[in-house]
Length: 608
Ligand code: ADP
Image 1: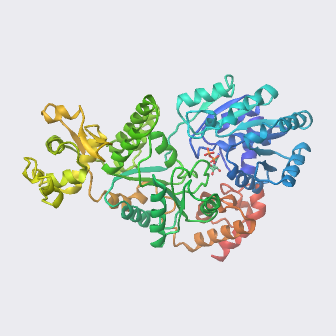
Image 2 (image 1 turned 120 degrees about the horizontal axis):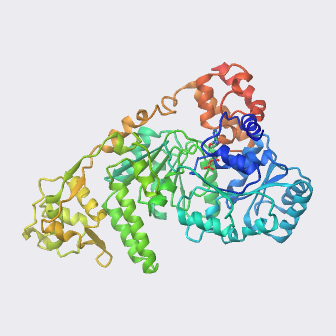
């Protein structure tokens, strides 16, 4: 029976007791020889969908992946499980490549990772034909299948030629996998890879373990540090910034304040980038401050937070970037701070780009959807999923809006004041000046333009500065005000402002809590079904288990999570196995790892 065999291998090799989501159906389908298109969110468990069939079908499985930098880690992880795995890409020298090829030809591999350009060399395809005749090819897995789409950021022209696999090896099943959810990309994958007959497996794109939080920007760095101090003192995470300069400044600032932070952006030397990425992957608790150049294929499972100091471009980007947190399924935070300046600069960037008008229009709409999400008072999980066309049952009870329901207030009068301040000052000033006028501050700039004489001067004295800033942010985000490129961020009225000024439309805004950041931080950790890491920081056994893991990882020059995931260590900590038999019941402890590390970790338990 296929299923029981699959389950047996799942336990024996991977140390897992059950399949997740659609894994079993996908695996059965591929083992039986069918083609599949798998859409699953990051952390959903895509790798198992081809790794297990690779072990259950005869011959070698060929995995096409664009992520050369990661192949080594994936192969290391499989070898730790006792699987015969190897990779072929440009990082190998001629001798090493020859050795892998000869293993392949002798039928001595279960899984081979190959870069697409390598796979498509005619010589290599001819070798694969030999392999198919003699020892067999179990399957082709096409990872990151969205790379075939011209519309995405990750377009790889070589992916277009992967149809060669279908034409030359019509009897070998193919499984294409991606975490990109949208329907146009899916259609393009089917068409470009000739997967018309493939069964599609579409999972929910919810990431239940990620806690989303959007917080108004006051002093972004200090807010970030408070967030790190209260919730992630020892954790690995990513801090996204828009510009290279801001990446460097933020990394340097964090470093000067004692955080283990590194910069990453496309302007750094390749060697520095590689070294920083390596430290992030191989060490514990490193914070990567990065532009979006960092991310694709970062499959470090225990990234505990993703922080955004600047707005992403769209909901798609936000989902993808925050999705790098918590691949291991343990609780993780997606934290973002944003203010009116972000909205203004994103809008200006869009307006001033050289993209064709139609494309700009689409990008504007995408940004507006993201702004709508930021200002939303509803459950974040629901809002995200609705955007991707999926229903979400009930509120998540763990995002900022669910934990601390947000008030809305009738801001019609305040909006009228703000909009008329824009109008009376001539529609060319930025938010800071407009707030000064409204609050009646006779500073040099106000005096220079004689704005102390305007009827709007001082009419907004009763509203504090942070609330004015919230009003302006929401008026810009809501499309009542537009940032003009020609006047360096000066705000102009839009058509939507007219009915408000005439008293024909009401404006309701969210009431930002002054202390929101702190308040949520404090209760945040315990709000969810008891965060897995609570109280672990000082537990001597936890520290000893982690130290042992790091020692073993260093000896073999692999990342710590390749030895055991955090979830496995936490289960060891909680269950304190006293024998190898008990150890074998722990999630993530398969046969090979039990043999290799069982005794080491039993000793750590005894000693603590
Ligand atoms: P994806 O490629 O979809 O982002 P991965 O294949 O890296 O996800 O899997 C995410 C995490 O889930 C990994 O740590 C993996 O070991 C774990 N995992 C996958 N399937 C199972 C399962 N059936 N039981 C327990 N853990 C699993």
